[in-house]
Length: 241
Image (tube, rainbow, N blue to C red; front, side, top):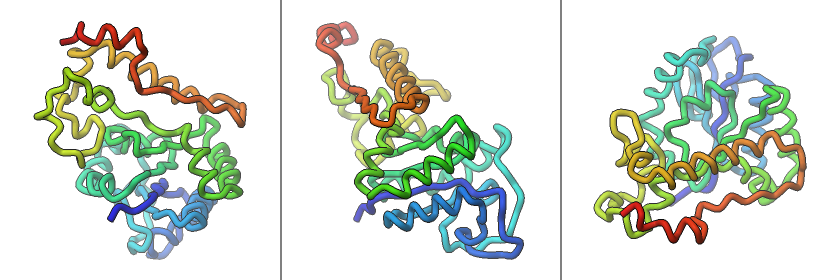
């Protein structure tokens, strides 16, 4: 049975000195706020560790001081979480990611529209402010507020229902909708972008637009980005056949 919602938090700099379960080992104020947010809304919680990878809250570990600072760190931790991420994607309807830039980069190849990737350019103070606001919201209003952080599906999936798509490559509906598991990934490059440049360009524009929402200050600014072709674009669909 698919669970409802998962929150993945980055580990905190401040930690307990003694071995403890992961949820108690992390003592930072931001982490405590995220933990409270998850429990308050009955969301599941997992923790991304710079040393151990993805941790369950009750997983007992030794204290450590290993951060994700470099590209090598990002790749190392990504390899640690790689065996788990596909099953997590299948288990949850929605995955909320709250962590700093380098920690987010660990997950970047796996992001699709199941992920709400929360970020704030103000840094840790901005994250604390967001969490404080979110703690005052009901679960339904919280999800509504988080929708502006939803990651868009990759171009392959956005256009896979159109006539030009080859049915034989869409046989596994359970694979994550992201580059890591994409049939168009070839030598770490997106083959779809070469085959269907107009659609791929639209996808990049939509992603940039979603990212730009984080800089908008209007609280009630409700912007919707359509993943559908416009009537003009529809007429040019057969140019790609």
